[in-house]
Structure formats: structure tokens, C-alpha cells
Length: 380
Image (cartoon, rainbow, N blue to C red; front, side):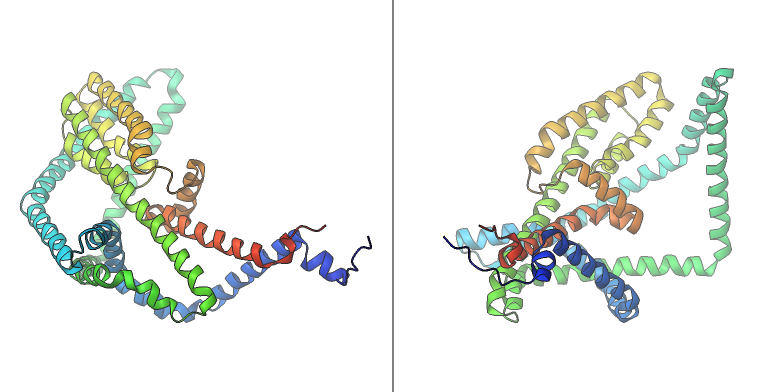
């Protein structure tokens, strides 16, 4: 049989239809777009200011939306229950919890934190004294010198920071007032945003899709659904795991009789929202208090920590989170470190869900490129 004549030019065969060259061109185009966006970032300054003003209530409402919306959808789908009625019941329960928190929980936490802060210098000085005694041997001169230097630097930093904050005077007070005002506004406005998200949020993707070409609507809706599923699984899973971690630490610390055990357990649950790093950060106050009480208490704290980590890693997280995110643990650590270094605390909190969204978008784009480009078609 005669081979079909190839009418493609050399440039098309070796450049446009070459996978490596095409990938490099796409990367180059992406970098050029980023560079140009950086050069015209002043255009986006008003947008940034807008999101800085309304971002907090929207984010809080979004978190609660992904927590509460499945119940609203289930009640409407299963029992044809009106969405407004389900939302009203949910808001009533939230209001009861808020009242209970303001009346009972927050005062208890405040008293516990105040007591721990008052006792903390005593705990820390005892640890410093123990380390000095342990490292007084000449063999530990280097360690002792490093510890003393570090302790001196920490004390000096705290003194400098306090002095600098005191010098700011009215500016510091106004900054605190501004922060408190922003928090209060976010707390007041987020219920209204949440209500309309729960009421009409399920209609938003279809409404936005109407403005897109007919061929792109299905792909757009599928992408939004996949992103919503990823974020929803992550938020519900992380909060459930954090609650389970708090309960496990609280039970463990109660059994061993650790002072401020419930407070430290609550802190551990909150910090566990940060994957992998949260529990280890929460162990710092537990270890400090354990050392202050007795060596036996320190050993007990470490045993509780090992039991909790075993149960969380082998039972709790696989059951509650599962493999829905499909992100390797090493990737999670890299995302946390890089996002934390670039964006600070917000990067640590939102790094993993942001990566999940980016992963969905990149996969969708690559699938579209693979289905439309000739470079992925096998030649005879």
C-alpha cells in the first residue's frame, strides 16, 4: 500500500506537533501571563481592597455553607422539605450554640487561658533551670551555650516587641480597634451571606453557565461540581478529624490528670485543621506543663500523644477523610511549607484546598488539550 503523503511542514511536525516543544510553549505562555499580571497589578488594587473588606464574611459563610448545604439538599431531595424551613432550623441550632458559647464556654476558656498565661513564666523558668542543670556538664557546653543564647534572644525579642508596641501608642490602639471592628462586622454579616448561599447557592452554577458558549457549559458545570466536592470533602473531613482529635486528647489528658488538659485539647483540635503540623504544635504546651508537674507526667503526655497519633493516622483520618482528596502526604507537606512561607498563616490554612482546586483546573485543561490537540494522536 502507498503511504499517504504528509502535507505538514517541517515547522509544524517538529514544533507544533511536538509534545515537548508544545509543553514548553505552554509553560512559557503561562509565565508571560504571570509576568504581565505582575506588571499591571495596580489594576487589581481596587479588587483586592474589595475582597479585603468582604472576604472574611464570605469565607466564613463559605465554610458553613459546605458544612450545612448537604443537609439542606438531602431534606429537599428525600422528603421534599422546603429549603427555607431546613435553613431556619439550622440557624436556630446555631443561635442556641452561640448563646451557650457566650454564656458558658467562652468564660470558661477565658479563665483557663488567663490562669495558664499567669502560670506560664513559672513553667518556663523551671524548664530553663532543668536544662541548665542537665547541661552543666562540660560535654554539653555547646548545647548549653545554644540554649542560653536562644533563651536570651527570645526574652530580648519579647521586650523589644513590647517596647515597640508601647511606643506606637494611639496607632496601636487604633489598629486593635480596627481589627476588632472588622471581626464584629464579619460576625454580623456572615449569617446573611450564609442564608442566601444556602437558599440560592445551588442555582448559581447554572445561572453563570448561561453566559458561556453552549459547548463549554457542560464542562464548566462538571468542573464546578468537582471543585465543590473537593472543597466540601476537605472542610467536613478536617473539622470532623479536628473534633475527634480534641475528644481523644481531652479523654487522655483527663485520665492522666494533666492540668489545663481540656484547654490544651481544644487548642490541639483547632490546630489540627493544619494537616500534619497542628498536633505537633499543640504538644508544646502539653510537654511544658508535663515537665513542670513531674517526669512521670511528661512520660504520660508522650504516651497519650503516641496513642492519639496512632488512632488518628490508622483509624480516624482514613475513615473521615478517606482518599477523596487524592493528594500524597509528601505533596501536602510541600504545599504547607511553600504556602506558609509565601502567604503566612492564611497560606497554611488554605494551601491544601487551594492546591486541590488548582489540581482540578490543571487536570481539566490538560484533558481538553489532549482531546483537541493532534500531538497526542498516535501516528500509524
